[in-house]
Image (cartoon, rainbow, N blue to C red; front, side, top):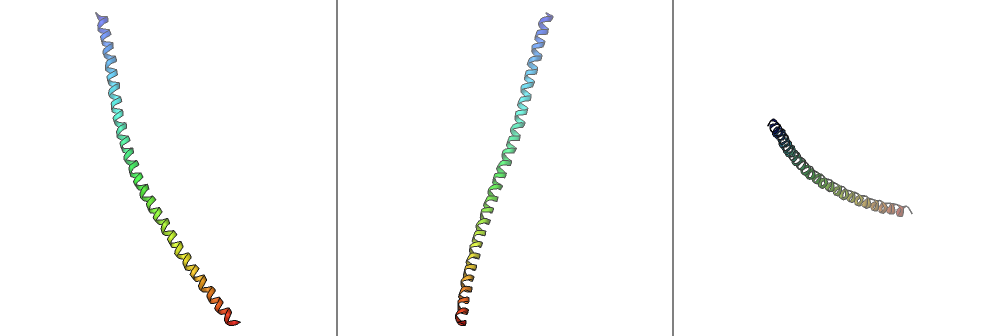
Length: 94
């Protein structure tokens, strides 16, 4: 009879430990899911910021390119004007 109680007691302890292990796994899984949700939100925010930065950089590079084109046109016009003036000056001296 004592052996039966001891056997049931051991089974009870094992079942209790198994249930506690399952409960602990559920809690840790819930904590991991919360952490993963936070990570997903952080990634979404960083993707948005990266997209905004990329857009700004592209606009800045485009503006620099347009500025360079204007400067090249200005110097091209200036060199044409200087060449014309040199030609006029050389033509009068001859």
